[in-house]
Image (tube, rainbow, N blue to C red; front, side, top):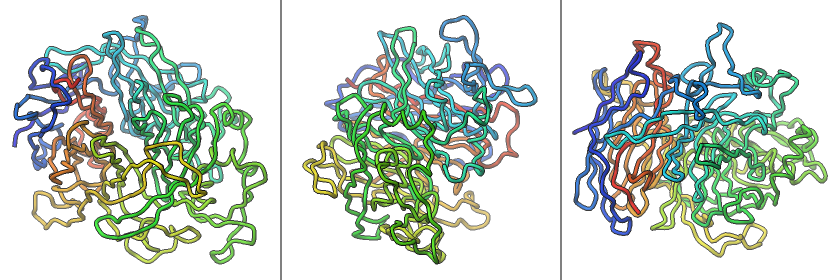
Length: 606
């Protein structure tokens, strides 16, 4: 099969690298006529040389016509670029403190968010066009986190490259935290995330939390766990790239992987990453305004355990709140002890007047204090959801996307394990993840995970019988395409892999090519040596491998843009190469720099 190759580079070649085998700007194709799109497949890498490269499909067929496509690098971590105002230079991914001063390590080297002890590197990147000027907003998955806005130019081959970049200050909201997935909202803003929020009852164990002593002038005494774990939104406010940054406290605090805004511009589905997480839905009071609304958490009723399982969904109302209302609790450093009384369990049971929950923080006995419903519903959204009976058994719930043609949502689950099993841990008997909880999910173990399909309907009510103010409510949760656990024999080209090379493995971020049948699935897996990106046809059920990454990296940030500057693009980030595995295989210091880029150019879809 054919593919485009991007080799690992070193030295000066790192700056402004764009490799492509593509033609120039493609003619526009009406989205109304898009009825057939297919990628040429990429072989699973076998050789050492292939495993050091980005391999991507070199051709796509749309309505019977072929177009050349390839990989184009926008920027890499550590790249030095002019600032947006041209007055200085910036290191792409450099972490800065609350005053905007670069943070350095003890040896004087810059703290750059990349593959190292500092964090995972860049994650979601959104593309924007304002009066003909192109921009990218990139968020970085470190603690402290960072966001950068980069001015882009199109290359002669139709790709995109960064020509200037500047950090986006998050100081007015106590800095950023482990930014993971995101999306471009229907109204054009960047909606980010803050993953793996600090556990207010176990701060001593949280390394990221104490890294924030580097961010604040006052050091450790300035820290508070409720500063982080929220949904940030960035809006470009001028042609020069000025931005407005806010955190939406009304949407709740938990391990935000992604908030996906539906076409009604007010319903948002929110995934909670990690072990024993919840699934949330936020319904804003007004379209295009996420500053106030009602938060809900899902309760599952299992119907089958086959092919990843099948469930009905109902929604528990956690209450209405506004950003300003919750910000007041954050600013005064409300403690968890002000919201909940916690009791020791007695042989797996809770004392009278306490409720048992089992969440990411384990089995707990909680009693809500009087008048703290709204505070708890946002500052401790997962605990409060479990307290009210919601399902908190999901394991590593990841990306979300929507197919408007069928009115179906898709959600990735990286591993069907732990709370999703029935009193088991990786297939062995254990009560760790189910004791004290509802045990709503009872599935066979699948380390390779799967993607689930949710039907979206109108006219629904919450569990109290109150109408839901949205016509886009999920009512089912059904396995769509699952990974395959597999052991390859000694001597095989794929020896050591634990998930099939011909199936998805630990799916992560998702995107849907609108008006087609193609669901794009990225991976973040330690169970295969190399991570892939797939095009999955939801009608024919065919998987096509379209992208592979170098040793130790993952594919993040796939997002489909039907028209940016006259072309369509599929964004992608190759995060932490040589980071999660095969660290010994890097041949130069630059090998560990993450890539931010696009696959394309595709013809624009109007």
